[in-house]
Length: 401
Image (tube, rainbow, N blue to C red):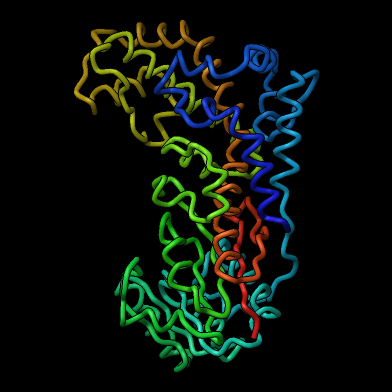
């Protein structure tokens, strides 16, 4: 893949729409709605329930505005990445204690590693936990494997597991992987026969792994929690990316973490209810407590979204120490009175979510280019089923034998 051309094309498509994707809809409402072309909003308002659900999947029904149709088509083409095919089946014994998600991930990681790491003799895993990947790689490939994690309790469980199963080529190292010199662990990342692996490295930890692995023979990184990044510290990181930057904000970084799988009818209906209650609560606090500005409702227990709005609102207000001076009946009437506006907020969210994957791919293309600039041969592949593991994009870098 020509990462430079792909990044340049994506930033060309995304930059004109930065006022839309770089800001929070709710915090800036109603002014934030002005970033959405009126014909986009009118089109979204015309959709029925089925059309809204398809929009949530990136599918436009009927006669969408030409600008929206062209943009989503371009973003779809530019974010389509090749899949890694194949898996390394694990036995019942090997998957004991693993979740379906973890089993799915490990079977695909092992299949990806097998043809690309024949020259590897030692490996290091960041955030290795109980060492499931470590023991499987040691057993499958014969590597000496170093599993690094901050959690001593998880590592103790891993040691006990290995003691029962056998696995003297796995070592556990309790440490935090950080930028800067770390003489105790840095040598583990250096050497042409060394593999550096980070599965779902959180926020800037992915970049720390890449920097420490500049002299490794093989690097596999799967990032997550992009909302913990900070721009410009963590983006852009490549020279080419620095020449083609996008205005990433905390709101834009949070957008990159949105789930990708297609929701069932029930899941979509639940999402709409959650948004409806949150949006109505925001409009209520703006009306009753204008001096407070934007009020964060916070995550509520799941059951609160299943009941009346008044029960949800009362719980949130009490948590915030606010008294609206309204009966439950008045709270219910308020929710009904703002339904047209809360639907407008929902539709803007559905439109804004269409940028999520493109922004995530921009971050990873920038990292791919950094690895190329460091002399690696680089792949960017889809590895996991996004229904099980939404952060499913793998950066693979190799220097060869």
